[in-house]
Length: 357
Figure (cartoon, one colour):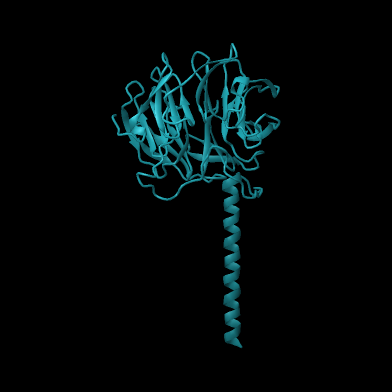
């Protein structure tokens, strides 16, 4: 009987220790995720990936399978161009096209790029977020506990904080400390496909189900628009007048962000799948679609031209006014556009052709 009692005592002690460890681990995760003592994260059923984002490919690629898509472009404060592709991160001289450096990242599937107020480069990949020091090209922060590691969009707000949009909500990062400040997991529309600020400094988020306005101070949703033509928002851009331009799978829309009312829907681009939007210094709107790049004049309401000769019709990223060129990232590589002729020239170091740079 004493031997049996001893075994039961050992078993109960182990069970209690395991329960305590489980409770301690759960509480720690709650603090990390929500900066509070409670885990209020709602449960979402499995969702399809956001439009225009292919499923993550984990397996190693052969040269024949290699992806040449250029999904993110960023002009930094020094005027250099950062190229985020599915081959990794590189910085080039946009005047000559020469590659200045390549950064060795743990994951090469890049979805978004941003530069903080002191010039550090933030790289959103399909396996997390990294901070890169452009002076040394070293990774100085990574492994953030976010709602999802699949990063789709990045934005620095007026305070200098970094907003990270993923396929399961939003995260707010302190760039200087490299720390996660808070998360918004119950984002209406679930997926933060695109981000933009309005004239009041509030955050607009393009989701699978319209737009959500988020207060940047509290990280709390303060408005929502769900009746947009095309429903899913894939691209956002703010013009000099304060209008928010919205790209969906079937429309280009001008929106008044202060009233939430649609100002106009661009008939010339009806039924076009809008993938990315950027204004240049002259106020023209460059519109990337799955059938090329268009230049739209918002003052006259007309299309000013279309780019020809791109490596692929599907456009994923744009960087106007960079080295006196428009740079275009496509599904099959990178190109720069001669603005006098409207013709594109492929950068062969980021395409299937033999590199010449």
